[in-house]
Amino acid sequence: MATSQSKELERKKFFADPVMVTTIVVLIVFLTLFILYPLAILLVDSVVSDHGLSMDVFRRIMDMPSFRTAITNTLKVGFLVGILSALIGLLFAYVEEYVQLKTKLLAGLFKVISTLPVVSPPFVLSLSMIMLFGKAGIITRFLLHIYDNNVYGFWGIAIVQTLTFFPVCYMMMKGLLHNIDPSLEEAARDMGASRWKVFMTVTLPLILPGLGNAFLVTFIESIADFANPMIIGGSYDTLATSIYLQITGAYDKQGASAMAVVLLLITLFMFILQKYYLEAKSTATLSGKASRPRMKITDRSVTGPLTAFCMIVSLFVVMMYICVPLGGLFKTWGYDFHLTPKWFTQVFTKYKGFKAFKDSFMLSLIASPITALLSMIISYLVVKRNFRSKGFIEAVSMLAMAVPGTVLGVGYIRGFSAGVFRTGFLQSLYGTGTLLVIVFIVRSLPTGTRSGISALRQIDKNIEESAYDMGADSFKVFMTVTLPLIKDSFLSGLVTAFVRSITAISAIILLVTPKFLLITVQINEFAEKGSYGIACAFATILIIITYSAVTLMNVFIKHFGTSRAVEEN
Image 1 (cartoon, rainbow, N blue to C red):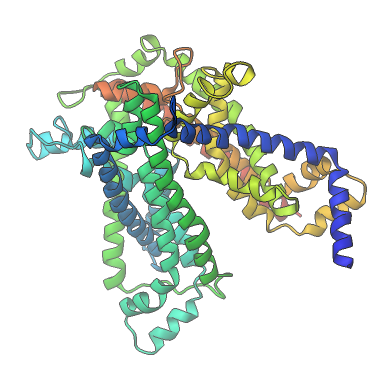
Image 2 (cartoon, helix red, strand yellow):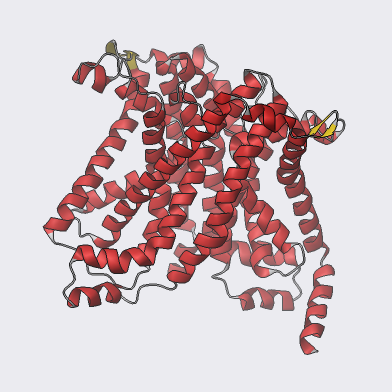
């Protein structure tokens, strides 16, 4: 009885707060219109024809040999990239957590390499791969004297995607390995087990659900990737590139919608498996933190091979990244290696570089604070408030993580250029910068929300309750109490949203109009033409922008973040 009365009192208190109710209504409308509606339109578009409900469009695309091949290609690449990325990510995480490295410089190098591709444009490594191992590649043509090497296709995509996505697995596995209690492994060692046996019988079973989780996350990222297969795929079609070509080449929007639904169903199935089974199982297997610091491995028979492998991967990644600025400085890649600033000059004089960087920078700058604030608000509602539509807000905001960018792009085309809203404000959004900003927000929202939820769960509820007891409304509590306490997560979300927005391509390549020039679209266009000098010049400047943003964020958090404030107190 008392419980039901307290719930009723809490519900009345909740609805008496107009700011809270308005915020929830606005969020539900936003998530419905810009995530659920485009996906629903895709589904309707693929099964509804002039004669009513029909599966003819699905039959038509499944009868296309090229599409069936694209499905097979996508799954093959996804499985290989998932396995390789999980294993390499585990190796780097294991070396950081378990191995005593000789120098701090080596440890710093491995850490940088493990995070480098996360904040770089998604197609940089594809450019480098072509310039190093293509027909005019420095390694293949000039060092190995191989003049007909074909870097395009399955192996090109697989290698590039593995190097791009293994840092995601590294970050996931690092936390799991860090939380293993060292006493479990030391007990097995004391009983005479070798390090290999300890790893196989103690460590691996504990992290196996997490390793499966890392595999699925990378698998989803791989099959949803558009930029790398577009640049280095050649004639090796994947689902993402097939959808793009179905619209831009065949002008078949309905067929593209059906293809997008097929890709969406695959990613949704994997996302549900990862989110609600393996992620939960991984959390249940390892809870809490290690009871004491781990004794690092110093045995050279173990540290030597592991360090050597990490060093080979690190040097390969460094070589790939050095290749990009050099490609923008050489006169003609593969033939004339005299240094020249002409490509960087032409970026701004001939190819409207100023407009491309201004448009990309401004749209990303507008989207990032909105994304960060929305992420924190959603996190706050999910963690700190109880209301009927809470599950809907959490599920839909996370759903965007499972939606490939190309699928979202097709959904926006079908939804806002020829959907239900044929007239009015929503229809007028199509082709505008506002719609591009909305796409950036939707694509970055899940990352910021996950970070915010993690940070908010560490805050004692009594801190906010005392502010409510003093008469503050929900808006004032959020702005003056909650947000300052999760300042680091907010700033991190803001910069992550900026980096993801300015390097985005898959979701916006189908939506951008001649009115806007975006850096990523320019790089993709010149790379497809084989104009690698211009593409590398654009990419180099973009890398400088993204790393400057990340560096500024780290400096700001170090000097003004929550942890700094706690230390001073």
